[in-house]
Length: 249
Image 1 (spheres, rainbow, N blue to C red):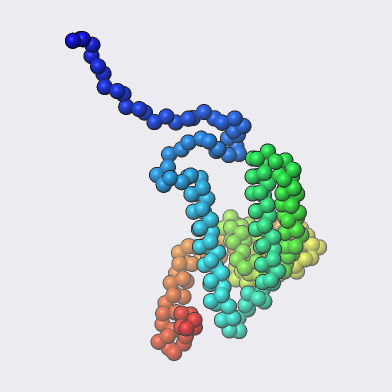
Image 2 (cartoon, helix red, strand yellow):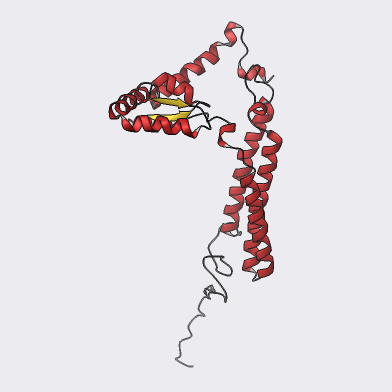
């Protein structure tokens, strides 16, 4: 009998090849590097598909809302009167295609295919340029909110704005600035010159705008107005009027 002790065979440990593959560039891809995953799928691919799915839900909701409320605004201004829907759809398609061609260019570069990478980069640049030169001028559609005007007033700064969008109503209600004809740089320059030359006027109009924000544009005031609007909608059917939900039936 031998006195030698026989040790049990060691359990084989999983071996991960963490060697960085040749040609790997951490700024471009993650080819060949292992990572932990509980789904059996690449975490990067799963995250991208989740992002794409959320985008589909977002735009699907927007498109569905548009289709449901289309031609239901009565005498109010409809979207077809504010925007050119076919033109907007075409420019959106151009923008999406430029994103696709950029992905193709990156893929070709990762495969060391310089000819295709350059081709797709040129196509991306052409589509991006087409998208930029076909955008409408800012004066075509008036600004509907004017949030930056409220921010200026909150800091006590008066404003000079064009006569379109929400600006005339906001300035008339607050007295915190001036309105000039849109597309008229001479009128804008003259009003700015008057404003810069008179510190007392700047202070008076800026304070008027600040008081308007504090009294009419705070979160508490907006929340109160929202609750009042909801209450009015809830009581409308009792008075014989049609609610927004009933108008869809």
